[in-house]
Amino acid sequence: MAEQKALSTPVKPVRFGGAQEPERQLGQSIMRGLRCTCPRCGTGRLFKAFLKPVEQCSACGEDLHHQRADDLPPYLVIFIVGHVTVGGFMMTDMVWQLSVWTHLAIWTPITILMALLMMQPIKGGVIGLQWALKMHGFGKEDESIDPGRGGPID
Image (cartoon, rainbow, N blue to C red; front, side, top):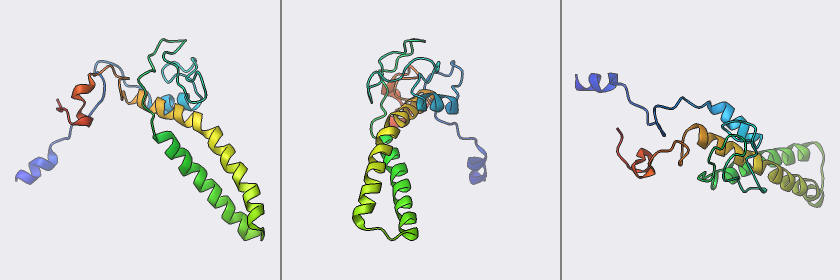
């Protein structure tokens, strides 16, 4: 009997940020970040240098200084570039018997170029993800009681 009651009780999802604010569109925020624009308005620039985000959006004034993209963008870039490069290398090797030096001459520049071109948009997408989910200060919450860090769940 107790097992049935425990199974039928709905689990309350953990939400970051204030409940009074409207929900933020996850896909739209990530796409705006991938275009290197502000995840809130989609018009302001997201980066002031190659991988240095702006402190505040010039168009809507959204604070972006507290984002923590950290290590996720490089991991995603390595995952994508690794799959494309290794897959391309293996398919090329199945069709043409090329020397190791020829493969190095082909795949090294492709790998470096892909990694450099993908890093900024993917970091923008991660910032858009954090903004949409109201993580790391984007929801104006007090991070000392964050349930994701061992704080109480209301």
